[in-house]
Amino acid sequence: MNFEIEFLPVGNGDSSGDAIVIRYGENNNYKVMVVDGGTKESGEVLVTHIKTHYNTNFVDFIVNTHPDQDHASGLSVVMESLEVGELWIHRPWNYTSVIIAYFKDQRMTEESLAKRLKEKFSASYSLEEIALKRRIPIKEPFQGQWIGHFHVMSPNINWYLHELIPDFNKTPIKKGLAESSFRDFIMEGIKSVFESMSFETLKEDGDTSADNESSVILYAHFNEKGYMLTGDAGIKALSHANEYAKSKSLDLASTLRFIQIPHHGSRRNVSPSILNEILGSKGQEENKTAFVSAGEYAKKHPRQVVVNAFIRRGCKVISTEGNTIKHHHNMPKRDGWGPVEALKFKEEVEDYE
Image (tube, rainbow, N blue to C red; front, side, top):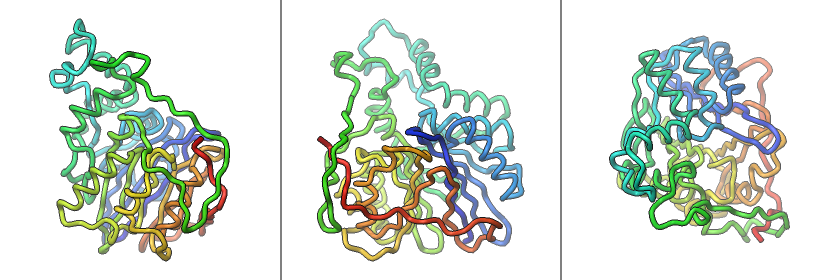
């Protein structure tokens, strides 16, 4: 199987997003897949990239991992500019009859809840509108489904409906919660601590939003090696994906050779134990590649404590930082493209306190 997985740059300053395009196949019979599209600007870059480097106007699969604007907005540009085979997207507004019981406001109707969800997740809802207008089939990416060569590892539909949607940042207040306690605010530390290859300060209790945990996690098997895309998934979603892999007799730690670092390298989205589960224990020789999407001048993405954690477990870590980065096998070289420098292990990392 020939393939290339490309991360295009999104945002600058402290803003980051995901815009990923994948091409795979054999004998010039290729599938093209776009996973998230970043901003409108990065969506335009995606369109040009596909036309120029893939020499096609057709995308087989578009996947919106979760409804954040920095992942969904650019996909509308792709869908309006190119021909699309399938759109894969979660549509929480279609499940109001199931989820309305979880919310505090008893005056709310299913119709008003659906309207609110469409408004709050407007970047994602606009993708549905474009797909319906252009008669593009819409499918929902839940655990166990296949999108071309990629297997959906998380979320499963029950977790998504009964736990994640009610806790989304933009949904109404859930029963039993006061408004002030509903939103999780995390202070970012500015002090430094020191690590070594054997001493790690990454914590076990990192916590991210339900919106991020709903991210679609994708896994593909190319040439007896594993490749995983994670969106903004957190520890819970990664654990769900790992348990699902085990149920399919798949040992991620022994098969993964490429992984997307979740949520632009946030320290709240991974833990030592889950990294040991999916990548293997510390002290390995370099045998994997980890890509991370980070704005060109981002100060918080990726966190050095996360970079160190992936390096400890045998990963060469590469960040976009304003560039398009590519992981590939047996695909044509491009003029002007060359090796990119991997991020270095550093002893000084960010303190949590």
